[in-house]
Image (tube, rainbow, N blue to C red; front, side, top):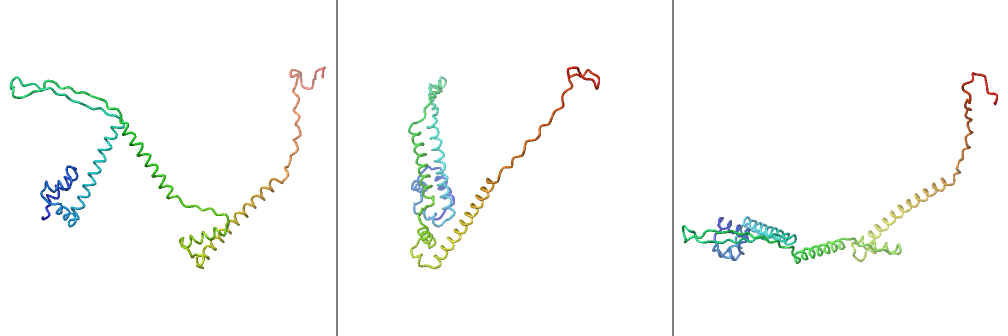
Length: 235
């Protein structure tokens, strides 16, 4: 069947609205499934629109599912409307509304929905922990320098055997070890110098300054009412 823009647009619309499956859509629009897949194969634009319609449909379904799950978790109010009809006095063949009653009922949270969310969160945390352990670098502790050197040669050779027989690999590892030794030697030297400085600072005698001579304060004048040069007989 020849490609038709109007039919293609209707297919995309029905897919996005999630009214029918692909087979049902083809039957309604009177095209074969093979025609649908031929159009997807030979028409990149139609293929892209169909794929985007499927994505939008899934997003809408997920959004609706989240709304329903939220209601089940929090509880919701269910409305029930009851309408009573009676024959019309002026026209008995027609019915008119006599009364309308709206009942409201609170539906409590669903235990099954709560358990589903908690189980889903627990599985998500376990998955994150598993991924974290897988990403954690491998750490191997060795007791002697020769074993460490051999492991470094293995790593330098891309974790392939035969690194000890490659002079370039061995030379690169020995050079790295030599530079590490120099750095450690410098750090050790600096620590020794700092320790010596601290010891010398502690050995220096503490200079004790002599106490300052007491300053005599002038005696207060006990007889301010006598003229200058006169003293009391008791002095």
